[in-house]
Image (cartoon, rainbow, N blue to C red; front, side, top):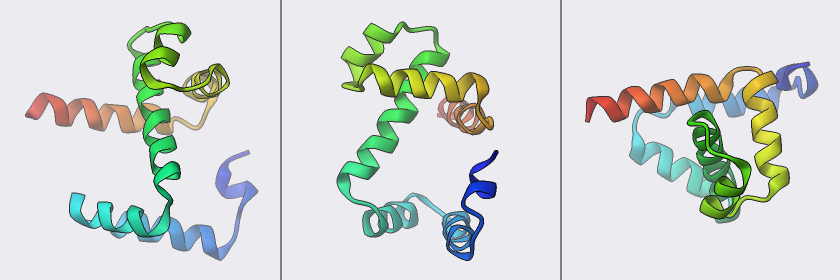
Length: 102
């Protein structure tokens, strides 16, 4: 069951619409600074880095040491990479394309 199916409501749609409306890094920085705590932003960034490292074939111990993520977080991200909705994979492709263009 997708997140949308589990949390189907106007608030979730409004959040996704807000995120999709962001035009650049500056707008993104401002929005996330306002809507999230520093800890929440760091946790999301950490999970994305864990996904990247898992995708590159790193092992759990190396990832935990490098990112500070718990083994539970590494395991959960790994499960999402392999059995999730494809969000991490899609975003990592965009990040990789951006890195290649620089």
